[in-house]
Length: 120
Image (cartoon, rainbow, N blue to C red; front, top):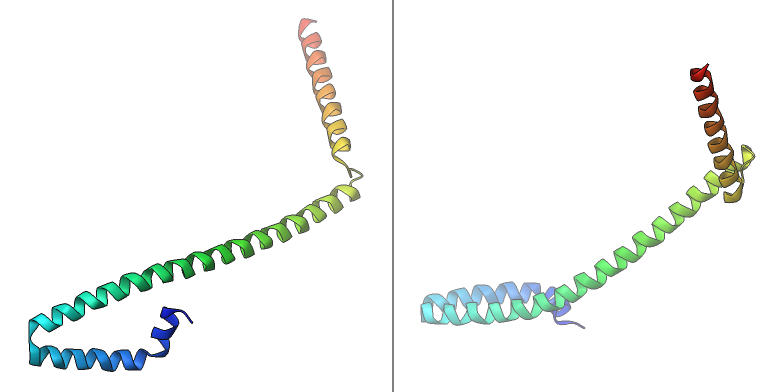
């Protein structure tokens, strides 16, 4: 069990200890209070290092889930696009490349005809 888990489970005891420390501070003065603050800072630093590790591992887990979700979305998108292209009779990249070549040739032919008409 990690230190932060212990702290969470004993939160009521910690609260009571804090109240006791406050009462002790009133009895023993400022010096005891300062020592308690220093101890608390040490504990907080140790705990924050552990919390950072937990946060990092949670972040890694969330990133992994997000990547998995994006992969599923991409696959679904690819399937739908592929299906739509199939309905249009264009099912492969090579078919698209061929179509682009035909469009380029047609555009060049139209351009050439336009230039010939301008000359006349």
